[in-house]
Length: 329
Image (cartoon, rainbow, N blue to C red):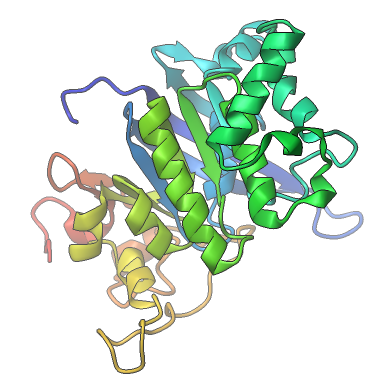
């Protein structure tokens, strides 16, 4: 994979939000994404994981420019999406689509299913009415629904069926990249496995590339080729999936894996919750943001932000423990 040219490259991505903590007080800045770099290769699934509030969903939306990034480059096949005007961005959007977390709020309750699936085709001027209807019916079958569902409204479906409709809508314009933002977190466990299997089947059939966002490490281990671990807006570790689970290097990654519930009492290694509480995004400490929860924190961690170190060709970590010439265990 290292010799392959990335389909998508994200470089120095930042997103700041201004918030007012109380009436009359000056606005403060929340750094939701803080200097994030990663690459996405054709045909792979790259997962972003981390606790709620770490910035993974914001990253997915910023990559598609559903929200405007504050700074950084988003290179799709060499074209910087961050610099495109509305017309060129709309034209490229058919290459990149999104499956949203909530299958209830992501569908328009006033529109029939067929109309929603055809809407991207209408926006991009693809096909006539007959061709769009045929495409919608084919997609319904592809995601495990029936032709009669074409005429129904979203409230007539279960959560799993609604997510299948959302997937069909994302596939309508034959995209190359799909951002899956927690696509199964709102579903029952039995339905989650069905949707995951569907996404895997579609990836093979349609030659799709996924940016998969999730907090569920069990789902990510099953789905992803590579994993990026986010903490307080920063990407602190990137590695192939099996290597990350076998040899987690960043203390935060180690704590995340240690917190995975055991399948049965007494089974596997000791599980525990991560140490301490996340700092306020409004008042991040100087240096490493994980310092107050890290069992290995030193004075350097409290005053200096670590930089990303490449441990080998496929494994990167942002931690002072792995600085060249220092302890690397």
